[in-house]
Image (cartoon, rainbow, N blue to C red; front, side, top):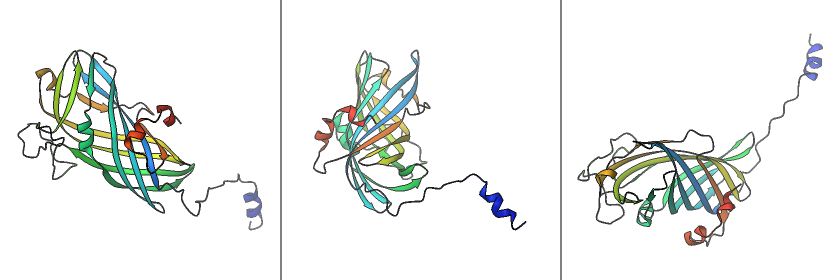
Amino acid sequence: MRYLLPLVLAFLPCQSFASEPASPPKVAGTWAQLQVQTSVASIPVAGEVVSKTISMLRVEIDQNSKRLKIRSKPCRVEVDSEIEMVRTVVPQAMVDAIGTQEFRARLTFGKTGWVYYQPPVMHTLGVSLTDVWREEMPTRADDPRVIDADADGKPGVTVRVEGVIEGSIYVAQRSWSRLEGFVTKGRIKGSLTWQTDQSVLDATSVLLSQSPQTRPSAIPRANYFRAVQIDPQATCEDILKMPRDLFEF
């Protein structure tokens, strides 16, 4: 039998396993990042309404081999909804209140090459929580945990509503997102997993005081991100001038 074993092995199908390169790709530098979050809201009378939150960010990456340190700053946030008669406007003051966020990420090597992985990190806006993952969100403007994050004299942060219904909503938010994408030279492309918990603290109209039940879209590729490496001197203003089709890859 010991003579038959090499012969049998010779006829087995060959399998090749990609070995990890000696060093990961260089991703250190400045990036323009597009994030698209697609949500489904259950609204009385209208039913289920799909909307997209589109964010443009300026991202700086420091690299130590596979370990990455990320500094992410939002430049603009827009909401695109199926309901054209009502438009949600995210004021720049709210975007500025988010500020620069710092967290960790890493590069891993998989079957198809190098992967960028950014684990979930919880962020709060307009509220200070002791346990950001499990603590109940405030539901009243006079809750001592509420913060006037955008410094407009109103509780939480202010979101504008325009159209058939006009007014402002004052909200507190906590949200997390996880990014995972393939790395090529000067580009990163992948999926975005997210969850947002929003509490309406007050509103200028009773019609705006109820927060609808919202969930991330389950449609594949409805939630994604794209990143393009840019000049380190580029500002948010420069990023916002970049054509959108630059992120279509």
